[in-house]
Length: 124
Image (cartoon, rainbow, N blue to C red; front, side, top):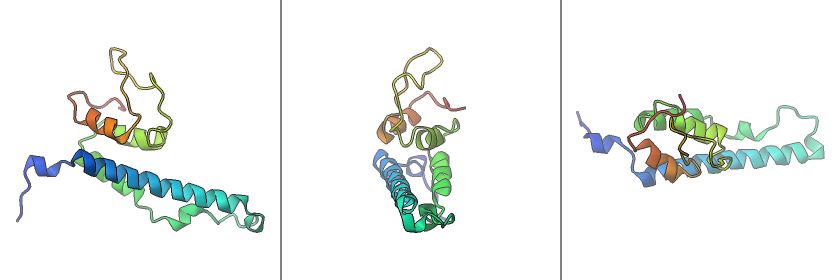
């Protein structure tokens, strides 16, 4: 049985950012397809037509795996993806630590750095 070292269990920053970017791109594609369907006069009567049906429901599984791999006990990855729309909705001051200091979740890189810092779990 192959045993991984603690270092091998963690994702590199590049791997983490690549996974987040792929999730964002898939999400953006679904949103564009949804918009095309909703803007098409021919499809107005088809309530069941949406881009989400074109996407394999892998996002929640990937997010859960990322949370486990990154030891994210505060749901910070989910917050970054779902509440901050992959950091696009981030505004300075929207996330602070216990002392009121700003925590920057504007990019996947900054989220990764935060998750690897000594401070953890602001989303809890």
